[in-house]
Length: 413
Image 1 (cartoon, helix red, strand yellow):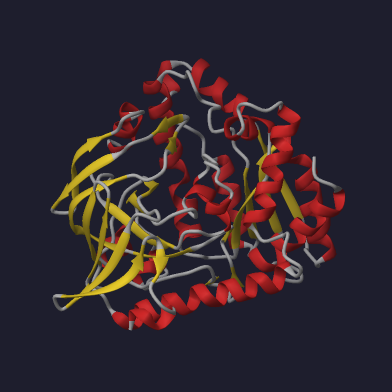
Image 2: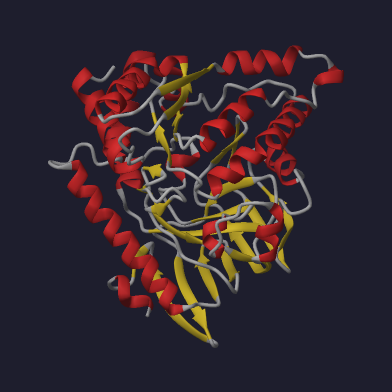
């Protein structure tokens, strides 16, 4: 277990650099029972920063599993929206939102896949109004990691639980630059670099990105209204915040109908408790027309059957390697971390701000040219063996060679 001082420093970083909690702003925290020490540290730090009130929602994956396995068939496809309504009310009241990424990746291992899939779709339907508000940045929000024994066991299966959890905490601290002499200064510099890259890409107005590497020859057309985003965002309440700690990406919206070619994953993906590896996908007309995986193919296909648009792309992100997440050498089996280890694409829903809009409804996304789906599934396609070009007017401009940016942030101009 990390020391009290380490947890206090991490909590302060999360609430200031990440969430940018405001004086007098309420805060809603969510995490598992195994994260209570960190939730307490966050609560204490929030009040010291002037929070009006702090509400904590404790989640338990075993209870969720029991609900899937034991609920009667007649009720499997429905979930009450009480908790979602409470979150929506909190957003109306201007509360900041902080959710811990602390899940055991294999908490649902062994659950009947049909029951799990139906329950997940029910949860997505119920949570959609809330996720639309979060995606539209109605308030400042943050996702940040906390090491738990279940998660640590998945990352370090060869270690004893206590040592595994300690190792995971140290890796988390490294990815958020907590080991820097001045973590806040390190984040200001890092955020500025990512914002400079996003500005350069926005000025370049590329029509498409080209990815080339082992098993990959992919052309991702960019939405006509695409906007490159980076670490920082500005919520509709005017607060500037960093939604994810860690974050290493610049990202935007593909044109869901203009993706062509073949692509191979470069890192495994944890999909609803199943490790999926060796993904190979062929795209035609924007749609994944052939999907294969060396491991976990059935679980991947089940997710891609979520709805009609799940086989189209909603995000493309460029991530330079190496970076602090990549440098750990770990497969975290958590999207928050693994997506920041390498460039990636995402099946499913687009983000409103990558299309220059604030409204997160299906109608607004579709009108702006983004993909509309209940799914958003990130998977990694970048590595030191993958090159990326921007395409504009038939000209190819090198952006990344062997996983590294070409030149400075203005190289894309």
